[in-house]
Image (cartoon, rainbow, N blue to C red; front, top):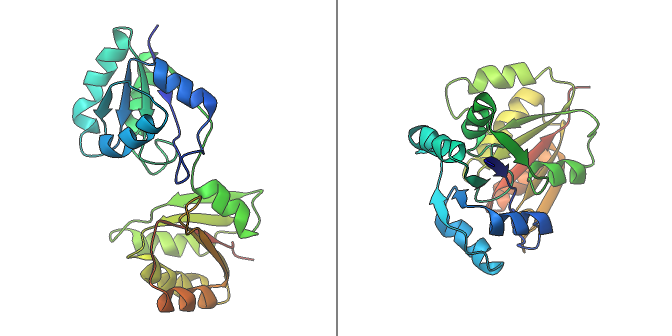
Length: 223
C-alpha cells in the first residue's frame, strides 16, 4: 500500500532521532533526501542501506509528478531533509500537498526541529507564538517587519550567520532596543550557545563575536 512518511532527522547530534524513524528508513522502498551526501552520513551511521534520491528546492517542481506516480504504483517513500522536519523552511510542502490531493496516505513522524528548543530555552512566553521562519531577503521585508511591529505574541525567526547582525539591527529599529530577544545557534551541536537580553545587548554581543552556525531568533511580542 502506497504511503509517504515525512521523517525528521537530527539537527546536530545524531542521537536525536527516534527508534521508529530508524526502523521506517530501513523498511521503505526509497528515501527522498535534500542532499544525498549529507543524508548518506546519517544512514551509514545507523546501517541503513535504503536507496537515496535527491529531492530539493531546485528540482521538487520538476520531479513532483514522478514521485507521485511512484507512490500511486504502490511504493512506500520516506521524505527527509538535511536537518529537522521536512516542509518547515525546507522542501516537502509541495509533495505533501499533492499526496493529500491524490488521496495518498501521509504520515509525519514527530521529531527534531530547531525552533522548538530555541523557543522553550528562550524563557519568553511560549503558550502562544508565531513562527516566521526566514524573512524575505529584499522584496516585502520592510512590509513584513512593519506588520510584525504590532505582534503581541512571541515571534520566532530563522537566520543565517552572514545576515544575523543585519537582521538584529533591523529588529532594533522596528521593535526597539529594549525589546527582549533570545538568539540560539548550533542547537544540539558541540558549540551550542544561547544569548539572551535586550535587543541592544544581544546585537552588541554578536557585533563583537563573529557569528557562526545556523541561528534561531526568538523575539518578545509587543507589550
